[in-house]
Length: 207
Image (cartoon, rainbow, N blue to C red; front, side, top):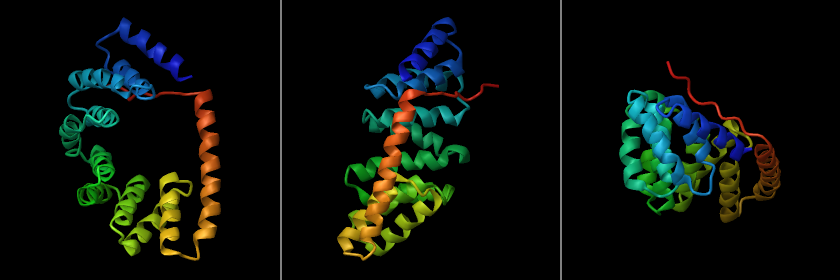
């Protein structure tokens, strides 16, 4: 259970408060709590202890996005975007924020950068497709939203957005996509139940 995992990592941090791996693990476990801001202090400590590891900056930036600490998150993610290993998601998160705040052009710019770093990143394809859906650029949206399930067939957002596209365009593929989305939704619910039964957090190894 998430609660048990977090309690175990919390105990480890109390024993070794300056251990970067323990802080990273506790931050990861804390992201699943009702108040996602609880994760930030542990990722902040990880960044202080391992400033050369861009993965810590990425985790911190992502943790700050959920409680809508957008300005601070953006500053941290800009640093993570400078490293090829973390560039994809470091552009993806600001893209999501911009899309959620009805700034599709800003979102498109960030998501295109994410896909430049990793053209097969299904999450970014789904988000970018939704941006073009918002702009009513249906042809471009369709290309992206069909591409994402090719990479990740059970991708929830991609399948939902593709169904939305077909419904708006009165496309004959709407019925088939509606049936497919019901399958994806059921699978997601099953995975959520399995996740609640058991969680395993693997912190990054520290050299």
